[in-house]
Image 1 (cartoon, rainbow, N blue to C red):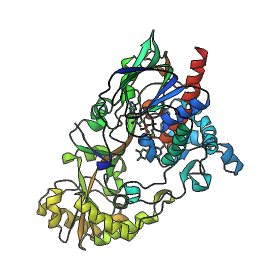
Image 2: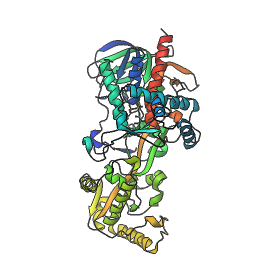
Image 3: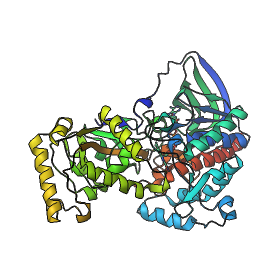
Image 4: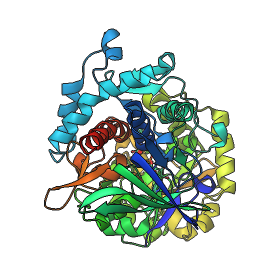
Length: 507
Ligand SMILES: Cc1cc2nc3c(=O)[nH]c(=O)nc-3n(C[C@H](O)[C@H](O)[C@H](O)COP(=O)(O)OP(=O)(O)OC[C@H]3O[C@@H](n4cnc5c(N)ncnc54)[C@H](O)[C@@H]3O)c2cc1C
């Protein structure tokens, strides 16, 4: 069974316990399961449309993984048009079709993309601070302008504040508070209620009470399954069948509850499941050190001190990584190559983030050494206990790579000449590397109205599914251009409209 290491480490809590208690009956038009981005959007939009809404969230606060999302895709909003920004809808659709090798569902995709401008304008109406946003990727993706760095801001080692996800969640929370939309926190929905094949509500357990919530429609917004090792192995055995380490940056509480609940009442689950996985990552780890290992100037070795992968071809090598003992690798740098990698990382900093400073790096290296995520030593031998290899093996590997540098040719794994470096200037560094995944994609099958489907393609009336809980329409590749978050938010918005129509039609 894969061993999961969370990017958020000790800040990341798994689920709580939910003892429940005497059952209380509640009635509403729409119950929303999960208060992340999709769920809060659905709750706010449904309330705006006049629905009586109850939002249920199993953790102590709203937000889910959506809090950490960086960028929001929007094409063709009035806001963008009024500023003369290009309409990138067609370009985006073309890119996505190609990226996903034509495995995405065109009807759902079109509905989502054509809603993305409407959704953006809606955010502006809700008070999005547009002065504090900037646009990248041909004006199709919106980020918060001051994405304050990297490091330990806000007490968080991996992410600072200033993310689009947090900004939107603040707006949704403000509306929920203002309109007093009922929210049950620390309450876990455990099953869906059905009557004659229709979904009619949910059962949930809180801290002191249990709830039977009768509703005209249910919106499932309970996220993906990245924190559930059994489900990872079931749906994505190619990545999660070994006992190796793998890190992730979705929360541990992301346990696929909605997917399991929907499956129990006959929904189709499991088509087109995929995950965004990277072969060599330094997670958990700080932003500064992570940025270094993206530069292939060091030497990548396994626990035996042996090279196994050409460093500049590492992007798609997740299976090679998984073949190594414990699924672990170590990037070996000396002082000069580490500094050069850091300089390059700053020069090529993605999306114009505020770059980390040398002082950030020094502090982070020492902190990570204390935390066991890397080793620093004046000798190569001094790294070996940490890696778990013999000094002879590591010395032999480094000497061989130094010969590649001197001869200008790597006749072993064919690393590009411009990435070859001499490793001989102490101190030396061994930075732990492993596979990492982010969101899981795929869950409950839906149609373009976000209604859950049975395996025979028929609709399960009353059940709408959103966000990471229903992203299998997206195809078999992790989305291009920041699409998961935008999908979550737009699907929450669309589901609210569809669910409210359903409630009205059935009253
Ligand atoms: C660090 C990080 C960075 C990211 N950056 C980007 C980015 O830049 N661009 C992008 O497109 N995507 C990004 N993503 C992915 C994106 O955030 C997600 O795809 C999206 O936010 C999913 O939203 P969601 O509402 O479906 O799920 P979530 O936000 O995870 O919300 C699900 C909620 O449901 C609750 N819940 C689960 N089960 C139950 C239950 N049984 N009862 C009650 N409540 C329940 C959970 O506690 C949670 O609050 C990022 C993700 C992470 C973690």
